[in-house]
Image 1: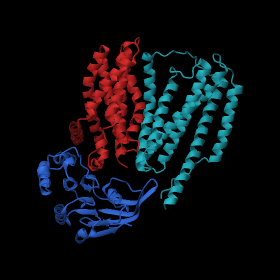
Image 2: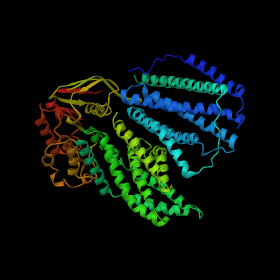
Image 3: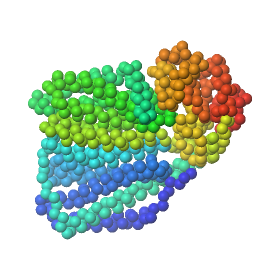
Image 4: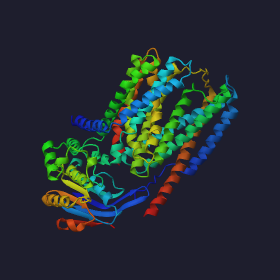
Length: 229
Length: 212
Length: 194
């Protein structure tokens, strides 16, 4: 039986520690060190995490699509599970994007939802798409067919991301949402530093969670294999 | 050009099957006209004329879904897909042929539906028709592809709309844009882009949907 | 032609085949027997190329277009006629002199008179005969047949016996069956699955 264990260079305890340190540092920077935003004040701080989480979600979906390609192309027996876990993380962080975005919208503009926020709308579409990914996966029995279907659908997802984004942009000329203007943040010194730390922190956190879930699922798989033998 | 010959043979088979069964196309026609009537009652008095154009696209997507759900049923139900997969032809030909046949049915339904729409809702622009043609390509390409997957799952016809609708959102944007905006070129171009990108993806990956 | 070593197949949690070794040379007649659920169908699907092994090795030296596979299902469209079904497969397999070959097979298997009727109107035995026509249409080098005698009446079974006798030594056959006695005289290789 081909082992589905892949040895990683960085160990899990090291990753977990790094996550903890980085996230704490990011929180400290964002809430205590960075100066208030000129327009929106304190509420804007959630944006540092909102953007970091969004980027991380894209990275997860891209990672999932990459592993999907590896599965289809090289028939690597480990790739299906890795693709699935990456997409799963992407959905979790995607949900966080929607939540943090919604909170920011409520605090800043008084509405829980804004159709004018492109990123938010994009994540709504992606969230629907990747939830369907899980429905697809649960609707097929485990085996090569399920792995193939999941991989192909993950590839569709990654093509959908830019296409949807473009669609949302061009839809604006006939949807005419109420446009809320927001001046871009002036990325001076501490703001840039805080954003960078927050971004790295969320990425490392995501990778740690990915590794944890992957390890758990692999143990599951190994257990089932042993039972079959 | 044996690829074209394979696609031709398979598409002929699909058209023949529908002509024999004669159930999908009439159902789609009836459904789309009934939907228009529902729209009339769903649009409050002071809605703009453009609202109806937007709803046209909803009707098209859901009518297409009706037909798409049936596309691969004969193959999966009777296990014939194995027979096609065993043949020496490129597997993507199976998808392409099925897509072409579905396009033919959708277009046939629209040839009736669009004039009816123009009748009920006062007019139809040329750009709308162009948009419908381009959108149909995307709908059939992606829809038949997903239909092949959905029909192999436990959830079957429950699953196809879930898989398809997020992917249909850009099509609706392109279509509605082409229908209502003064200079629709951008939207028609976008629909073309969608068709090319997703068409290529479907063509390249159908092999993996029907084999292990 | 076919070489399998420690071949295994599982679908998710279910193991269907395990540790199968098989050697089938060109011109051989391999008979696969075993109780229900022993994996005969799965083994044949692996040989035909419809599934990939989960473990072990499998080498089949024949290109896809030269294999003929008879499954549990007849693999024909019920809403098309016999002739339309065979026309489709004839085109896909690029059978030379398609019309003549189809006519010859339909006649041989007693389906000429019903060739324009929809398959849904056939009896199970007639459908099985049509399935045999489909398998033989492109004169495959390797025939993989899953319980080919199913649903055949005495006349149909005799036709099949005659076909086997004709192909002996020239084509390679892998046949699974519940009734090994029938094919026993022709068998050169035997495999019994547990």
